[in-house]
Image (cartoon, rainbow, N blue to C red; front, side, top):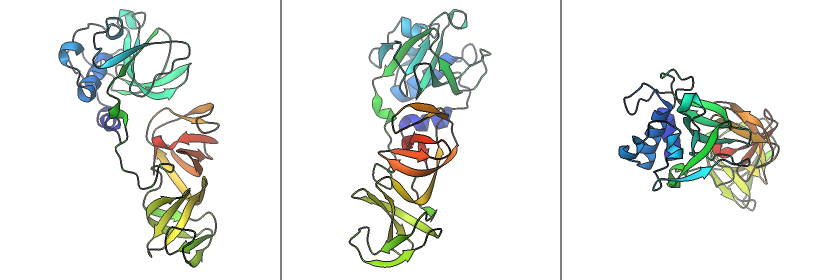
Length: 281
């Protein structure tokens, strides 16, 4: 999990009055984010009266790159999204992008969504009406996943120690290799506990409680039933890996995966592909 993800888990759903002024404002959510993760001093955070001025009177060049909105622009994860004074009676609006969306709409985390100075932070879908652009953090390492995965990069984090049901007949071998001795054959539908995983030559192997190994994934095809849970709101699913967006799914959605390739998993429930970076077993 990245430092940014840890920060979201800790703060999302809370009401944050960072400057102890005017109740729970959208500006407070940005201030908390910029202070905690990016080290922006209060002297800069408190230098503006309204949210829109963070962009129009930009004075945080040491911490952000200002990027204007264009017809083809889509905010990336962690971008500070800012709307003009035409929104909210002259104050504008400020939020943090989740990285999910397209050129028509996108998702952010924010607070004071309804302008009542008391709304807790949450994930919201926004559009580009009156959208000025973003401030992109120069400190990008806060978005890097520091969690050590049990297997190599392609499968990612949806394979964890657990019981797995076989989708097909597989051989049990003395080591994770096709050249290793076959000690028995497991039948389709049987359930086995797999304690660890390793990745060798396009094959992911699982270690059984007996110390023997079975192949659980080869050239994108799973040989065991695999499930995972979406860990973020507004995650796109696509027609093909990195292809056309078909829709979005939200946090805590449990999915079955039947195929995997290059960090993407195919879910029959979605009838599409989702980045496994947003899924945990």
